[in-house]
Image 1 (cartoon, each protein chain N blue to C red):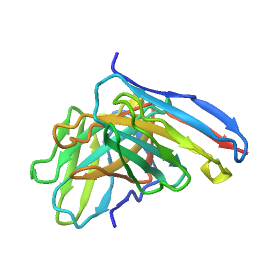
Image 2 (cartoon, each protein chain N blue to C red):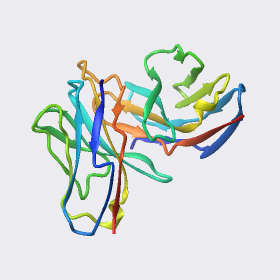
Image 3 (cartoon, one colour):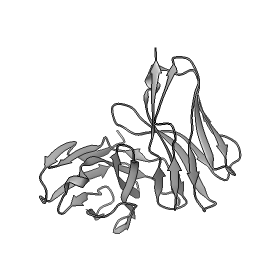
Image 4 (cartoon, rainbow over the protein chains, first blue to last red):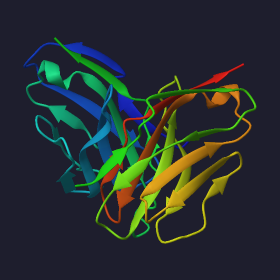
Amino acid sequence: EAQVTQNPRYLITVTGKKLTVTCSQNMNHEYMSWYRQDPGLGLRQIYYSMNVEVTDKGDVPEGYKVSRKEKRNFPLILESPSPNQTSLYFCASSLWLPILTGELFFGEGSRLTVL
Amino acid sequence: AQTVTQSQPEMSVQEAETVTLSCTYDTSENNYYLFWYKQPPSRQMILVIRQEAYKQQNATENRFSVNFQKAAKSFSLKISDSQLGDTAMYFCAFMITGNQFYFGTGTSLTVIP
C-alpha cells in the first residue's frame, strides 16, 4: 500500500530535549516536505527536499533541521524544542515529473506538545 | 509575497444541497497550480481537486468543481449534492512552479443530516 508514515504520532516532551520525527514514503517520490498546522494559521511549510541531499527552507524553518540521506526518508529534527513548537506536524511527498503536479501525499500527522 | 485567503472559517450545509467555499490568493507568478485539500476528522489530508493556472477550463471531479477566475485571483470550490462524508476542513492551496506550497487557513465544513 502506497503511504507516508510518520512516527511518533503523539509526543509530549520538555523544553530543550532533542527529538526527531521520522517520515518515510514507499512511493519512490523525489519531493518531500514538512508542514506544521496551527489553529487559525493553516499549514505552513517548514522545509522541503527535491531529492537526496537537496533541502531548502520553507516559510517557517527556524528551530528545525532536516536531512535527506535516502530517497524514502525525511526526518524532522528539533534540536532544542520550545513551547512555541507545540503543533501538529505533517510530512508529505510527491512525484517530480520533472515538475511537481501538486498531488501531495500526506502522512497521518504527528501531534507534538512541548512543555 | 505569496498568500492564500479563506474568508469563511466555518460553514454548514444541508445534506444533498450545494455549498461554495471561497478562496483568493496573491502571487506575482504567472505559472502555478491551485488545489483544494480536504482534512476529515481522521486528520489525513486528501487532494480534492487541482487546477492548472494556464488552463481556462474549470476543473471538475464528480461532485466537486471549481470556479477559477485568474484575473481576480479567485478559486472557489463548489460541492454539489453534499454528503455527510464531506464534513471536513477544506484547505485552498497553490504551488508556484517548482517547490513551495502555500496553504490557506482552512474552512470547516459541516454537512447537516
